[in-house]
Image (cartoon, rainbow, N blue to C red):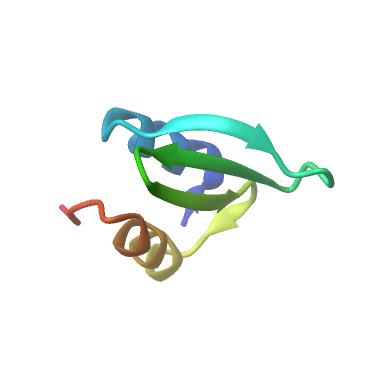
Length: 61
């Protein structure tokens, strides 16, 4: 399990920047050039983290 905030930190290291928080405050929108991703601000399973990173085009380590 991983916190959404930790995933945000990982994506920032890959060049993504935090753009905004959703109106309900439960997720963060991030962008890198023409790639956009939404990261929920809650506990995420390892599979969910891998899926978000794959959709964002980040290599899985």
